[in-house]
Amino acid sequence: MSMFGYRGRIPLTTMECDARMKLKLWRVSTVALATVGMALTMGATATAKPALGNGVYISAAAQARAQAFWTPERMRAAQPLELPAVAVQPDAVAKAGTPTTIEPMAFPNGGSAWTGGGAVVRTTGRVFFTYQGRTASCSGSAVTSANKSTVMTAGHCVKLDGAFHTNWTFVPAYNNGNAPYGTWTARSLRATPQWVASENITYDIGAAVVNTLNGALLTDVVGGQGVAFNQPRGQNMYAFGYPAASPYNGSTLIYCSGTVFNEFLGTGAIGMTCNMTGGASGGPWFLSFSEATGTGLLNSVNSFKYNFFPNWMFGPYFGPDAQNLYNSAQSA
Image 1 (tube, rainbow, N blue to C red):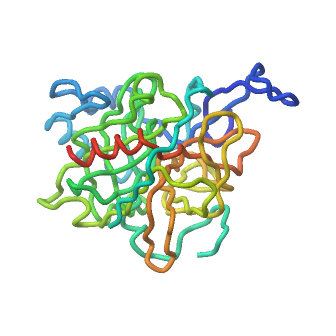
Image 2 (cartoon, rainbow, N blue to C red; image 1 turned 180 degrees about the vertical axis):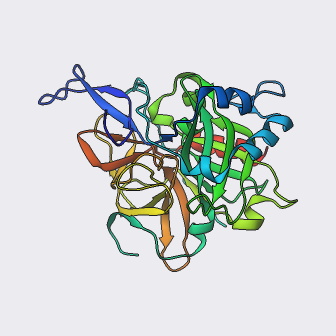
Image 3 (cartoon, one colour; image 1 turned 60 degrees about the vertical axis):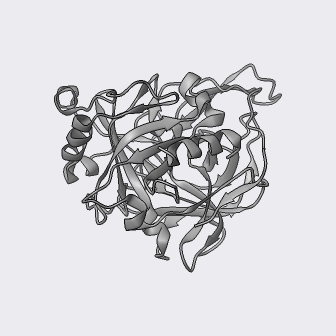
């Protein structure tokens, strides 16, 4: 098992690239070694209202349990986990629609601590949830939205192996167990239809709608990054996240930057040179990012790596399906 904690398999040959031999594809999320018994006692049930088309509503009681569940000790306990395989569907590549934007340090960089400050420190956070009885973590980003309560992340950070996660919370500006802007529990989780139906890696995009905290809305407290869809490929981008596998420990905001390239094995994803590890999943990728202000347009999220190219990170292309997901979340 790789220390990176990435997972999945796609077809490939070493010399001919003819889609017959299997090659590992690893995901970028982390799971702590909490006991199953504890999770069953304190875990939240993510169903309370009638089924949400491509997501779930979370009951008030489950939200309260999630708020109490995430102690600093549990947040610090994240460890990488090798996740099960997901089938890639090369014929289901995301297509572009009409270009759309929602407005509200060193370059390139392969992965180091972000010291530039600015809005990205407040809007990027660590995501915590329970997955198959174990505590887990990803990353996410608060974005500008009509409800001022929308967090964008990876699809596998809200649902994996056929079930939506429980005890789901977002901790902006997380710092070694500290939550300077509070712990925000989700009231609904959702993902693209393709991810919900078959966990298709091409559409690995998720969203959460969070509750108010102390009477305040999320982006009124931390701000919200802009979002962009159906943009030209091959642009300069910045990626952020909270990797927790070695050499990182999940306590520091890490970033990468560079000119993105097209993934070459049929997923339709975009790639960047980046050595972030487990726990970075769901962290934001920005176009038009300003190092001076820490603001940009979110246009992808950390999604997966290949074990034979550990210094490349891939993220899904934000096309019409990503835009529909965002619209669904922001109007909830």
